[in-house]
Length: 283
Image 1 (cartoon, rainbow, N blue to C red):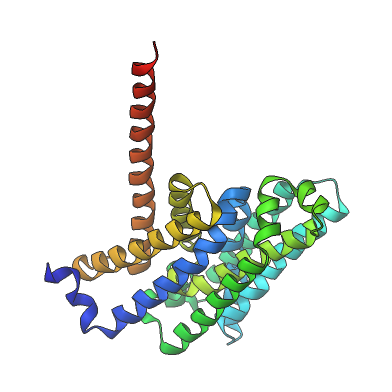
Image 2: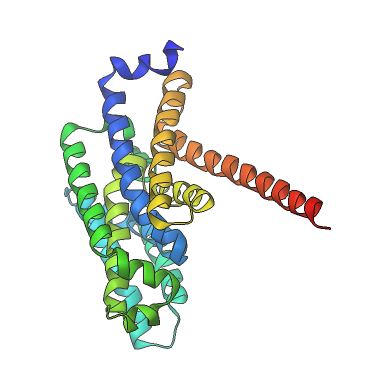
């Protein structure tokens, strides 16, 4: 069984990648739980893809990609708020328009420059095995911020998941809390894209949180299950990447999705057996 641990004992790249994956798993567990409970998968997907033109523009100007991602996410959130406030269009329509528009703009920017021959792969799929100590420090700081904000806004966030009007009645500013939640999603996407990429960060937001939703009935326990699933996916994905030479980021996300379907199937079997037992004892 040495092949389960040996790759991480003397390989600093894998050690840093594992730690980065753990940090991403914690941040995505907090944010992904609310994404699943509130049905915000569409805005999460839009943010994950909408940062592409921002990252591309930043790299073209010689600026950090993280700064460009922040600008792209801000444009997405601000644009959705502006369209819904100044027109009769629903938020879904606004999100869809900006999602398609920003993604198309990013593709045009990338296709019009030879600079992205190698960088495009990093933008889309991350560079999990190339994480530096400075990246880890930044990731750790961002994860702390996400967790602290998640704790401070736990009550209004939970109320928003069920009824925005109830949150308002309970004395919370529903609209402000909604935008704080969107900012938290954006922060997680911005920080995590460097690790697993813009295309795959959405999977880390949804799949582990989906496992938590299947296994837990309380939000806190759901986050714990989600974080544990993300960490296990990181370990298994990096192990597969090391032994079979697979792409690290994609392997991690694929493991997370596979774990979701394993838990989903087990839960379906459990429910079927439970219903059959209830029918057997019913006279």
